[in-house]
Length: 243
Image 1 (tube, rainbow, N blue to C red):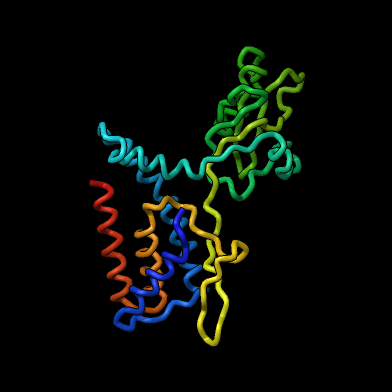
Image 2: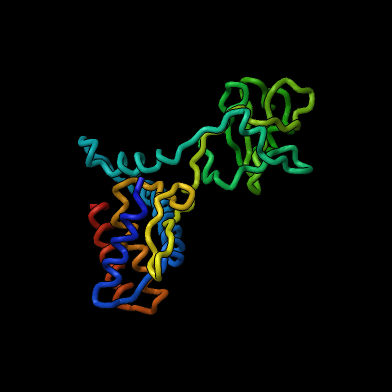
């Protein structure tokens, strides 16, 4: 976890240097959420790139291990009680995935792993003969238009969609917020959890958060030097991480 007030104070200190301009709390919160989702989504591109490169024997220096450690922060599991609360997709029998689900990794039905198929293969499978058709031991799943469909069991209707009994997924980072109250004309930090929401990203991403937010602020304030400086600092971090 990255403490949002630490990031906010660093952003203000750098932005105010040489009178580059003031960033309001409202602006900061907008930039902070944009920066967080950019870093989160970059994890997967970086992991894909690193998969083509051999790792090393030192676990604390292996980029693959570091990326997986960052991603695992967001790995969650929903069981039947929660999945039953997912909205039912009318006319399909499937269920809508909640907005917080970023990417599904594993689907289970009655203790068996579902094979997650593309729509065409899914439809072919449920309409095939008894030897290929899904069953209790070999259920299948499909995700289309954010609706998850599962077929398995011993029903005489091979197209009857079921509700998964377990779903392993990566959740989206929750929105962050630097909470504050105003004294005079000055905004002061309010650490009340009802107002302040910290970053869910790994602590090692704090510096990149600062530079991304500064870059966004520089673009908004039409401060080319601030945006350029932040971009250069961000590039330096990226180069070090990928060496």
